[in-house]
Length: 192
Image (cartoon, rainbow, N blue to C red):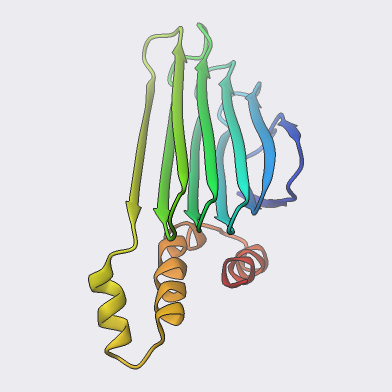
């Protein structure tokens, strides 16, 4: 599977010819990423990480459009929201009538690391075929005070403790990035 590191931009449309992993790091933007499956047997992963700093916002739309049989797509969006930031995510799976034996999944997790944040997660599934698997999952949670306390009791400052927790939150997605160079570039963004 090849890995492509994407830069934030408004509209991106892809027609994968081979198994591909699309990776993107968001800070503040309005982005639509669409993957159109026109070749049978192709599998894709869309891995998006967002660290939305104080006062910034992200509007993200992802579309996995399955047009032919036997394709698969895993779309993952993990975001951290700092003070007064927002994330508005719409994830769409479209499975055409002739796209049987398709598997597609949306996964959205948001970690609240500040106050006065806004998080919207809207999964949409349009399924016109039988013999498919399509589903979604979404969760939002805060950094737990017990975790902060534990790390502070080990000699870290509150800021250092929060950063370690945030890095751990992203590690689940980072570990899925197959290309080591891309993984390390994104890991450096997470620490910034």
